[in-house]
Image 1 (cartoon, rainbow, N blue to C red):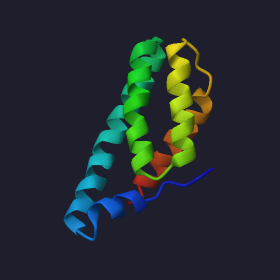
Image 2: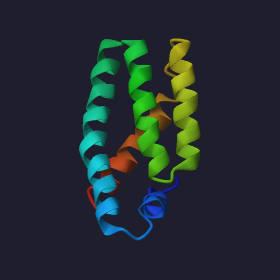
Image 3: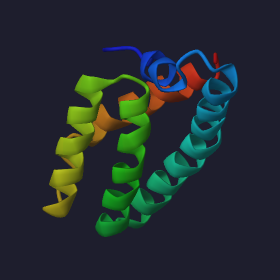
Image 4: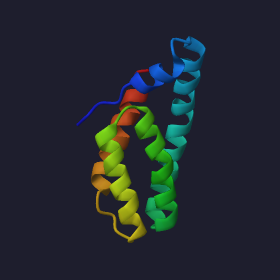
Length: 105
């Protein structure tokens, strides 16, 4: 599995440490809330809300340089529109990897 990284954030910041830190803070703040929201909706089987949560989380996946994981999230989001949970397990592995990673940055 690919590993999260800060390469894209570094490109956006262009050497500006305050921008870099602000972007990292946004991820560290928003990701846990969005992940909790995803699991809450999943428990209730609210497919439209699950899909919306996955859509939000896809942005964090992309920002953290996870190109293959982004594709998995995209497939999962599409499957949710069809009321299918196919790719759920793969998607949740991505969430775990990001959770572990943001604790180190």
